[in-house]
Amino acid sequence: MLRTHTCGELRLTDDNTTATLCGWVQTIRDKGGVLWIDLRDRYGITQLLLEDGQTAPELFTTARSLGREFVVKATGTVIERKSKNPNIPTGDIELKVTSLEVLNPAKLPPFLIEDETDGGDDLRMKYRYLDLRRNPVRRSLELRHRMAQQTRVYMDGQNFIEVETPVLIKSTPEGARDFVVPSRMNPGEFYALPQSPQTFKQLLMVSGFDRYYQIVKCFRDEDLRADRQPEFTQIDCEMSFVEQEDILNMFEGLVRHLFKAVKGIDMATVPRMTYADAMKFYGSDKPDTRFGMEFVELKGTFDTVDMTSGKGFGVFDSAELVVGINVPGCAHYTRKQLDELTDWIKRPQIGAKGLIYVRYNEDGTLKSSVDKFYSEADLKGWAAHFGAKPGDLMLILSGDAAKARKQLSELRLEMGSRLGLRDPNVFSTLWVLDFPLLEYGEEEQRWFAMHHPFTSPKPEDIPLLDTDLGAVRANAYDLVINGTEVGGGSIRIFNRDLQARMFSILGFSDEEAKAQFGFLMDAFEFGAPPHGGIAFGFDRLCSLFGGADSIRDFIAFPKNNSGRDVMIDSPSPISQAQLNELKIATVAK
Image (cartoon, rainbow, N blue to C red):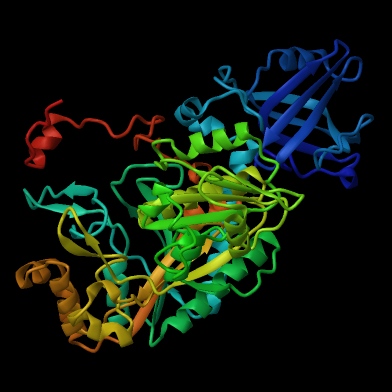
């Protein structure tokens, strides 16, 4: 080894010992007779000391030739610092240099390699290998490492076996778009990169591997955002001879283990909520339950009460749904603040036509934007219905039920953020259960699987497949943390006849089903056990544990919002010779 210690290792207990360090020059402070160098590696920073009269002159010459990010090797004696730095673990000592060697010079980096950098996202992505030297990014990847490590600890302790599944597979029509790979040996035919190992893990259950998991790379050709990348990682899991309750208990155990081992947090039992209640009270199938502000209907689809009609207010009279939230302690909001909130909800991204407010003043009076139509007695009835107290503010939307719920969900989250109720260091977990099995695509005029085609209906709902497809509930479950879906799964269909029926409902002909999934249905005829599983978005889970909105800093080499790796300039054209080998015509630009 070129070094005896790392730059984060030496302490006062090493006083008067000789050490050799290697690393990158962080900063240089030259006071003439005394020169200090902060030397950094991924373990920390150690201060190097050169003193006039005690350090050889040639070492001063070498030190003064250094620049930021030069790679150097320094040998010296560990001494106690006169001016200590309590902000770093090595702050009690410094290395009095007796030998200094430049291992490699460096160009001036295009941005500051410090915790608070002056580099924008695009610049840091272009020089990602430099960005990875910064402490926040390094800590994110260290967190990811611990998460993977502790996942394996838990899964191994529960008798799961890690099995790798193929990366070159068959393209399937359901779900997101596939990334496809041409086959040179089979001209005109293509592999697909897996969106998940779904069918393979089900085949492993048929094979008798009753507890499987894999920390696996998956690929989806989708539009990108902060929590989505074209290639991403899942904790993929499957179990045989289980029911829904077994899956929930097993993987609640995993999540609680990760919180304890990685964050030092003892998580309580994860509460459960049906999909119907999530939509009713939060307008979302992944509600953020760190705070309240549950939906209250004044006229609606869930509740029979109608507290708005007969007053001549056409906006409410013509609405399918009138629904609102009670915002505690915000009756002091000024007209200017309420107008700004109205403008926010009317943005194209949200799409509301307006916002109704009711202030419940501290003196017990009520003031609203619809005083012309509703008396104080009416408003007091609303306040009682909302459970509002003096000092609270009621915010109300109306219109088409589905749209109004979605809009109010966004408003609820915005108010939670404005009031500081969405602390990233506070964690609220939730199981959401009993999703609809199917959703109808109006544009396509057909039914789609809400999860995937292999999800089993609730046993008691199977008769509804003949009478009311929209009412069939899936034997499916999602794990939500702080309003983010981090995992989803289901009990699977394991009977060939039921699986064939599901394909038929989804619009597959018998020939199409056989061509796409015949291998799976054939396997079901050789003794498939009851089975189910779940997959966690590992990148999302890491970003939540790290208190970040974006998953990018938890991926060593991420893509940008256009799906490009700007560091290596990919995707990129390939040569005509390669295209000829693959029997692919020249792609027009």
